[in-house]
Image (cartoon, rainbow, N blue to C red; front, side, top):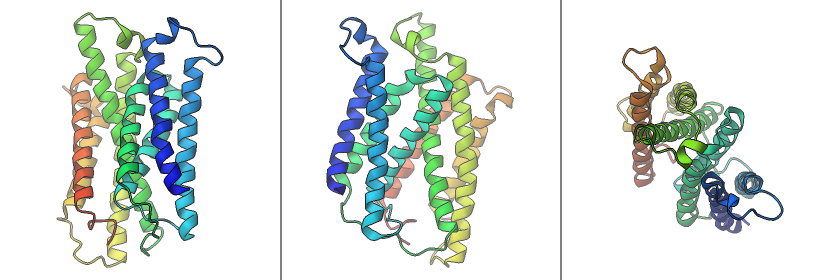
Length: 278
């Protein structure tokens, strides 16, 4: 079942992303579909993908009868789920469905690589002091999703800003949220990432002390990276109050933060002995 769900998930996410792109480009106007509209079909595909994703992790937990390990590529799959769920909640509340193609495309690529590379052998997470361990893992996971969403909003801000400067008023101008809303979404998701990073980093430090993790020190690259990201995204979150920190400059900083997250994930995947398996 786990293997079947892992293979099916990228397909459903791909369908959701494709339907979102068709709706974004307005292609259904040229050949109106029979039955449900494209936007409705896209929503159904997206919610189905999120549901299947939850079932996948529930199936992994059922195999071991406890919290399954989230090492290696399974952490990327978990990040894809969190990113999709955060976007679903934020886009619906803020009327920002125009961001669907980029976000869903990112979720699809993350889950595709995870499904292709992850091992289907399920193991239980190593015994660690609860609640420090769960607090640390869940906070960092949701923070990473919020951080990623903030960077994607910043990237869309830069793209739309450039299109408007060039006076190109095509699908991007029609379908994307206004610049002020994109800037608001970027800052709010950065605020969520900052708060959760602070909680998750401190939870990890408490866990390391409580479990007497061998070799732990505050100079560990993972700890330094987490602290650096806290400061970085705090500046983005409060940029509206910082002189000279325009929405355009802040969007650029958020997009760079997205690259930093990708780099940190690459470091984690190359050194799977760090953090998760200790």
